[in-house]
Image 1 (cartoon, one colour):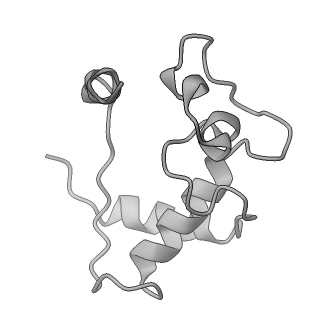
Image 2: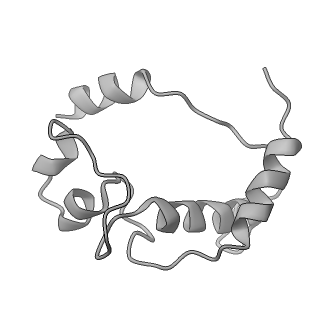
Length: 98
């Protein structure tokens, strides 16, 4: 299962954001991560972006993985702060393309 997940993730596009602060639970990067997960989660709410029928997470033992549609279960049951999108936009502007 882990190999299937790794193979799938290898082909996904990634956006790296330049958030220049020290990692901590109160850091800007933690704030963005927490809110991004909460925004993208389908856990205990109406599904906005359903995963495909062959998504391997549907076979997980974890209810939060199966129902959220995300592998990271931290913050999937939280509400997001819409103001974080301004911070994401600013981080994108401050990130140099490679």
